[in-house]
Length: 289
Ligand code: GLY
Image 1: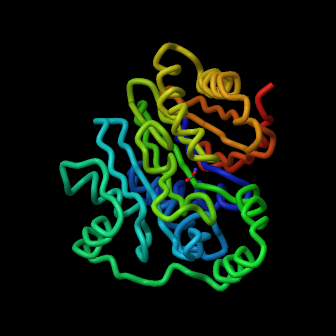
Image 2: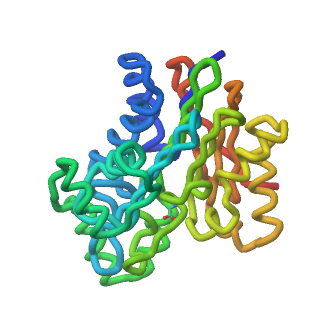
């Protein structure tokens, strides 16, 4: 059975699955591999939907969200609205491993990160500052930014059927300060259970959260569907119950405990990258019929 990683979007998906796959080869540690994949993207200022260089809120500040879940024992850790700290996926992992809680928020999450040795820093890159200034002059930029880049999520699977899901984002560009989307929400932006599989989401957080796309996909796999059938069904329910969700790309993707994977989206435009036993491929995912 294969070792599988699946991640999101044309520009970020490859570095994410490649680093995850390399980390897995080095350490045989699935949780660490998924974390390492996201760290790679969070720390690279070219990617403007996550971590350092992410597009900020309407005040011009990055507020980062992240979460991680271990399918072996359903342990999960998440942080939301964290300023001036990267990589936040690692703060989420500390929440999972070092506390009895699932989520820490805002400045208190930052305080927790500082207690773990993270150093505060500006999260602006030249690109994120320029984009913010442009947005302040022309607020139509908001739409364009959302369509081009989004949350990076990864799922991983190893023999004999262990799965992990993890997610990191700066959220919607120019969001209202304090707004939190699906990405740090267990079952919204990510979910993993070795009894069924793992799933992750990317796109409009309000829609993904409302429909708990990741949890739904995992529950459909638990009921016997393949990963592709589970994703198709989860997205079909969303677009049928709320047709406006077709206006933007929201996607869910999954890997089953057996190792098959799938992805579905509300609209054309989503791209998934996979690493299957170390071989990388990208897939354009058509919008729901
Ligand atoms: N999917 C990321 C967000 O809406 O915040």
